[in-house]
Image 1 (tube, rainbow, N blue to C red):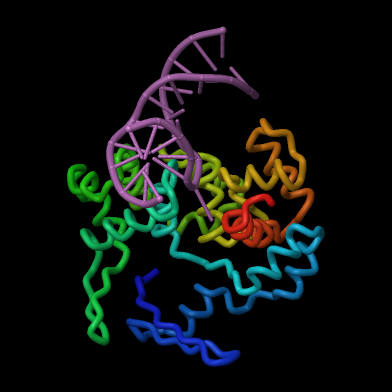
Image 2 (cartoon, rainbow, N blue to C red):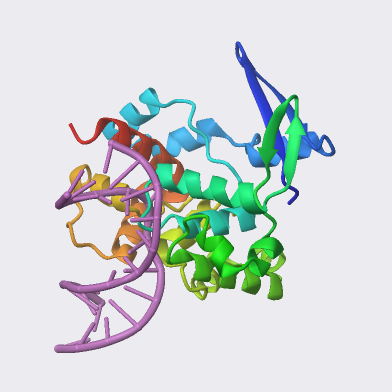
Length: 245
DNA sequence: TACCAGGGTGTGC
DNA sequence: GCACACCATGGT
């Protein structure tokens, strides 16, 4: 997918948008923001308890996005043992160093880098983006994605096959694979189980504190079903802001 | 300053 | 299968 700059503005109940480049603007907006999503159906499925209910009330406007596959893959490979703030900084470092520079309305933007640029980058340049031990893995993964034409192929794979292929890449385990599956390939039944999700599963839903990833994945699927990913998104925001009081 | 961060890998059992 | 050390680096 082509990289874009998106300008959004809320006016009452309406969102105004503008993208650069302008070509296929509506197609992009529709896809990226998942405009066709049936929220009533989602709510019908996930509002099963007081925890989800109060999270939805607190953050009613949270939406899942459908992000570019390669951008999601590289971004989430940066995430392990990093804070959200650090991840943002490092993604920005990458964009500033390797991304296309665009000046629009007097503002300077840097697009997220093309995968071939990451694959061809020197390890030293990647390390200068503060990627640390992830730098080599990201460079290698970028190369493999291109060689195997994974971006195209994965759209024809099942969820399981997609996860298997992603986890063949060094630096992608269960959680990162699930992030890519949810945020880019829109498998809405997935909740990527990170530290915060573990905490709310244990503290709210009484799962044993040493449950395996697979155990949690199964529990999530049984309990929330096809739209678990949405429930996870609301709960995640809630516990991060308000903790477990 | 010491501790934690939207985990993954390798090793040892 | 599970436990554990280690991994770079920034933020607080």
